[in-house]
Image 1 (tube, rainbow, N blue to C red):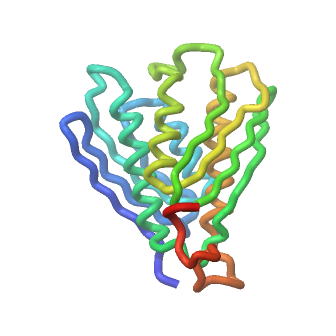
Image 2 (cartoon, one colour):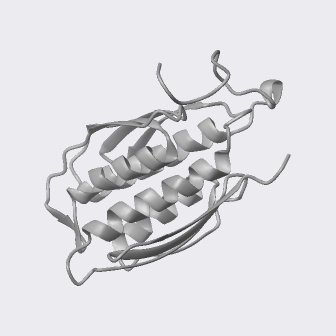
Length: 201
């Protein structure tokens, strides 16, 4: 099977981002966004999905973290979508329940090429490190849009904001790992009765 690798370079007046992913990797990563907590979360995503990720981002952090956070989600999601190609052979669906101390989070996704986000996460503090916690929803929305995922992220309970967000990223990682795996019984077929993923229901 051909290597499932996706590369993206995204440059705007606000950010400059280069990403490479290997869906069939080992969870190796080399990530630098200029935002420490975001780096930590993307490293978790790589490690627990077994998707190799190289990501270098430079953004207008002198303004705030919004553009870098959102554009990182867009670029990484687009790289995943490119690596998936026509999505033939993938398992398509993935789900995960992630506990982290007092926290439990459920993530369910469909690599449908029909982007949609349901994000039921409430955080008890306005910042984690230097990052505004409202930006995490923007990251998940951008990633789901660009990767072509129907993505449901639901924190069932928890108190510590770090635990809640980390469980969301780990949950996405584990669900994504399942969804992009090749099903050996249908490795040559797009997993849809339409014969194509995307478009109308």
